Length: 290
Image 1 (cartoon, rainbow, N blue to C red):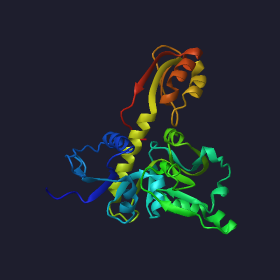
Image 2: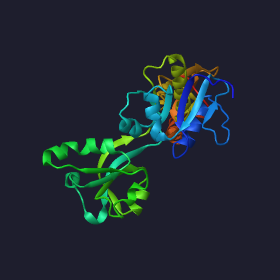
Image 3: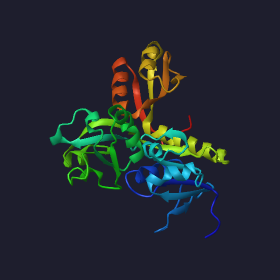
Image 4: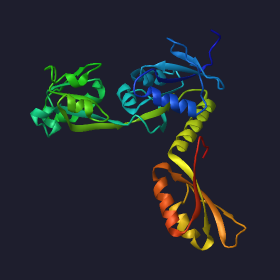
């Protein structure tokens, strides 16, 4: 294999974040071909080496400078304790890290679990969370690390409660557990090593990802409206800064275009029609630079 580009970007090699990361990379123009059984790939049109790692390791690799950038969860960064720069939140992989106890125990106050046995894949965050209560009560909560199937610990008699991620709550409920307290909220984030010398590439990748993510959230709406109704129409579609207004040859009429939130597109069209707008069209955005 020829020499790899020195700039390294780490993404999860599998799991819930991998597919989303792949979409963001493609949308940002970071095209690559990953050979079977290889955890390294080279981007086609940028001097970037992609490194596929377990999500739980990425923060450490970035913090230690082994890779320049990475995508992982906020929970992983907090647990690792390393110093990294948070470039941006990516808007996917949202979940909560929660203290969970068996429903049958009816625990309503998390302080009742202090001094007990807690199983988790996040021992540092768990110790930090229980530390104030431990100090107040003069007890020592026994935090045990388990790498997987955390939710089974209570049922097996290994723990009084667990600290684990909750996304939909399906796994938690199936294990007979319920949330007692929330430790933190998390989502996928783009991070970088604060001492990386390749700042230009870091900023370029960030801008590209920002542009793609903006494109996935917004659509472009265009319509014709009487100038006398322009103020009302602009209130409905203010755009990111302001709508673009173009006079039409028809006297007293203008064409308007503006960015709108994709989730509100149908409602915006209805509201515009109700005030008298015509020729209302929606356009998907494949990418952007704002």
